[in-house]
Image 1 (spheres, rainbow over the protein chains, first blue to last red):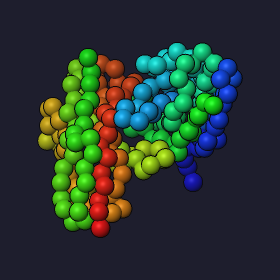
Image 2 (image 1 turned 90 degrees about the vertical axis):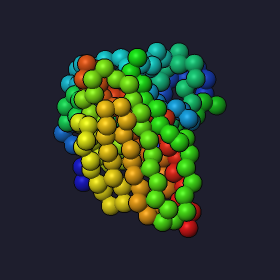
Image 3 (image 1 turned 45 degrees about the vertical axis):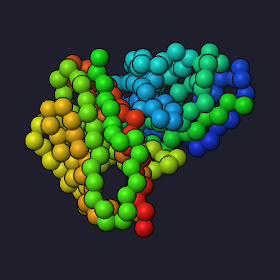
Image 4 (image 1 turned 60 degrees about the horizontal axis):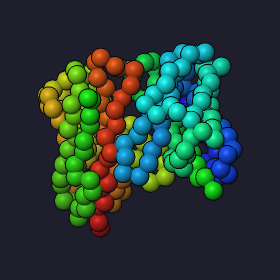
Length: 112
Length: 111
């Protein structure tokens, strides 16, 4: 079955630590995205990538980093510079830029 | 500034009681409008894409419509399993590499 997987489902981090969230897709999609979801707010775009080895900052990129070394994978690192990282993180992909986005199951990150 | 609002914030319906959710948007040229359903603790599930005013799409008990300034998600004779948060998102013609999401409407259908 084609789809998007995210791991882990739950992640706990101590203050000052960097953590990496995994996102893999087997849909052969070119574009991939990372969003953050907080209660009562819409999804906010962190980073997106339209093609391998290229990515762009979204609206809230500060304190986050990404890489796109393979078409199937788009990991997100939440660095210690992110002041309020506790949130639900969603990865999405689309056939190409501007096409319908399909989402993974999400990772809930909690800072202890 | 491109913006998406949704109303109501929360809606409680009796099973079988039809209603509509609203998505209002301001963008510099609409390229597409998307509806998603999200269950608690899960990723959004794609429902519909609408591209032009007057367009309608249906799926089971759901029908989405689009005008020049807003979209409606009509729910006919809802069932408890329709309970979820419904998200609206828009894509501007001038920045089609991104979509802007609204805050969502939380729907509860009571048996």
